[in-house]
Length: 303
Length: 263
Image (cartoon, rainbow over all chains, first blue to last red; front, side, top):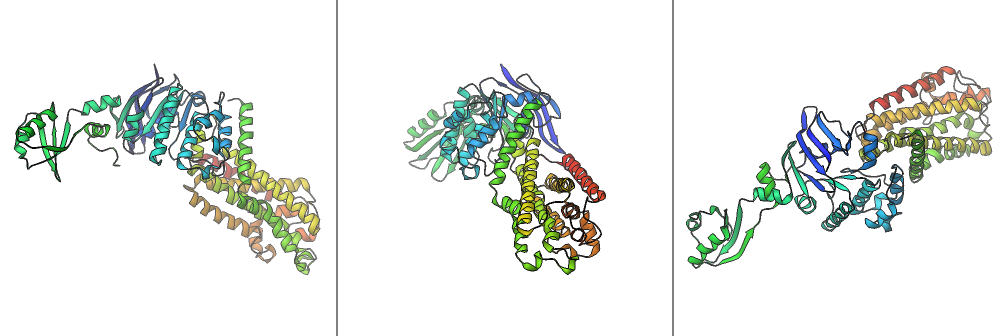
């Protein structure tokens, strides 16, 4: 059942079109990723879902409500974590949760939330003294303190160290397992690949593709790469003559063969016939990163 | 949300913001305690606490006491408020509240209540300390003094909020706030006692928030004290002065509410 439905969303700021034409729906209980480079329109899209912005065109329905008209009701049921949002420097963790939980009709037990988030021993610590990871976990706690049906998390792990990122991912999976639908905005491939059930790739205000992470990879996976270091000089023509091979490149001592079909078998057969041993042989699988480039024509991590 | 819930939320937010205020030593020391400390400090100088020819036999500490209050009011309304409010916007605290069922204006109203409470504390401390230690009489027109204090502080707060409303970032807010603060302090006689200022500046000071002359008129029972710097006299303050303070409060407050940027 779709609990968020976005149809032909369009939003501009002055002359800049932030979101051009975006449609998607999010099913109950899934982790839905919105992935794209900075400035692609991800945040504007979720801000329309949260009722923080009024769309210029298109419709948004969340839990059967209009996010602008029924904003009071939706704010009880949608928790949001905003990017680059801080708290008062001298507010303690417990004070923040106690305050924010008082805003909701049926708040979660925030003491339990602190346990789950590993912040129980930081109850009386002021915000300014928390580490980046702890601040982020507190921010997630505040998004969950109202017992929401939907949590919208924007740039969840930006600025965290690798360990804190992995811990945060585990946490998000726990949250989902407790029945919360999650909309995750990110520009990190590994995060999207690890967490999301389905992904919308947004580029320049439009959806470039919408699929499961594996589905997106397989769309771009027609090509594969074999990489090795030949034991003796190798004539490129031996490889380019193969029907499976589309290109041969060299990088230092390494030879990189790109192609389709049963590429690995074709390449190793030729090498064996010529008594060449392939050292450090690797077959490179297509990643979501490659999929993004294949689908949008540009890299994700460049702005 | 029902009105009752809104009230209890406002109460809770105000309590939390009050605690946060008490954790800011600069605001507490300079906004609440400094006016009293400064007046008592000046009162330690014999020449300033004894009747002086220059004021027709009035005492400097009595003439200057409302100026000490202006100092505290200025710190709270023109330094603390613009800084806190613009930093709440810059740190996206207002935005975060917008995602909850509570309107971010609740946080701003709570700030104003906390600032008012701090200003009342500063005034009570100053009046009682001046009375006990320096024999400065208690406000002779308590009702008018309260009115002058409230409209004067409201005007200062409204200007502070207007600065916070339009300044694009905390640094600029602090800069604008400093200018407004300096003007208010100068007109209030903090830098140079008002009897040393040219008459025109003194008259401008009468109408510059928070309105030091109205406070002086309502505070002093002694004609010589109230009129030390000019034409006003002890007793109820001039209604024109109070009216202008109220007008500034309403206009600046309205503009702040209209122009306020939530992000």
